[in-house]
Image (cartoon, rainbow, N blue to C red; front, top):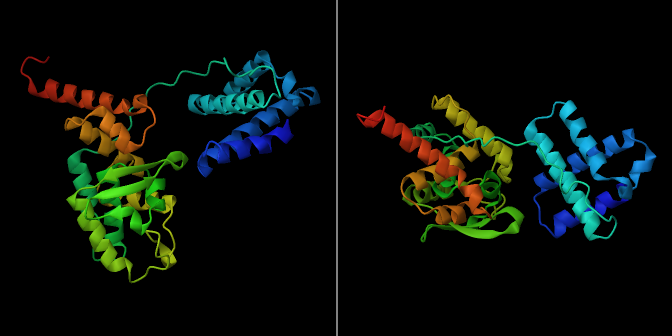
Length: 295
């Protein structure tokens, strides 16, 4: 089965345009499946020998290993995609993982910050520090646009039009979209541009780190956690928390779901609908507290 793994990885990289992070997850998952296959003997190294019963035995093996439901679901999904590729290439007659039921995942509502918490986070930035203007520009940008942290890290200086308040974003699968930013974000980016020219090495990349090279996603995550602690916010705050806050606050303010979907870069409306649950919960909470005959 090993000779088919490399062509599969090439396929998901080039034809599906999956991100390096996603490709790495596939590599780990497929390699783990191959470890399981090896325990069952060389006979099963032929993909034609893998049937639905074998796939179910792998599912049970993963569950016995005490992987989380989310991890099990992802690993089975990776195997399903791998065997779907083999079926497409005519290497097998059926996909043994096609109808394997994975554990049901409970809908976990994404965490978000209330507007007053966002203000606390932004106010925690010391603009007198050499990285202050850059850090504030990043925080304002993510909250104003709902961009993913990886999208922010990849931004080029000429991707932002400060006159129109538009940002060209290279999203998942190299899909481009345009997001909007408001006056606060524009002002913070302008202040950052004023100091950026003093230590810019890579003139194309927008947000620069130590030595004038591109600031990584991991560095942005650490920076946001630092300011959350400084602001006294007890909940876990990540770049995705700001993205969730962006979507939640738009919908709470009456924005159309499809517009929010487009701004977030979601390919499916169902992915965006998770935020309607948050806003409904918030409305219910406000109603229960405010209406004299709510309870």
